[in-house]
Image (cartoon, rainbow, N blue to C red):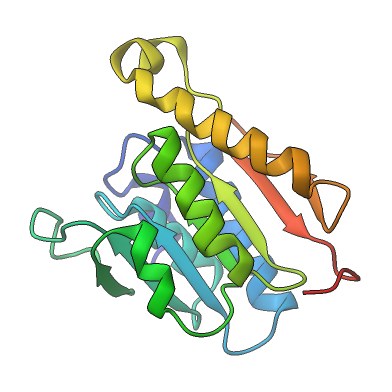
Length: 185
């Protein structure tokens, strides 16, 4: 896959900086966590995030979680589709999740349930990234439910930071956290 693919594939919701960050964090866990690297992308939409993650982790097992794949472009490939409610699919998911990208339903209750269900699967050295943590004023006016992302993430982070998680610097609307390498999993 050419470098331009991840920068130009459909998905206007991801800025160029966010695409590069996703690629770089996927590369980080792919390098640091060893094989087999597992990545879960909640909320696939057009597939731009899948392409970015694949660019960083070419041999990772990437799972795309979404409520419905019927409307997505066929050319978005390179992942195992898990169709259904992300707040429930974690129950049957075995194994660690080295990188979790949360960009599904943006309502507070759903994001909080995704955190409760999926984040405990992230091992030491793993990374969690949330999209729309800092949405633009225009996006908030159009989609007020985006406030739910920040609220759910802040509540989780208040309890988690300093315990066994650290916040990573990241661009634009993303919030990212890494489980300390020396923390118990």
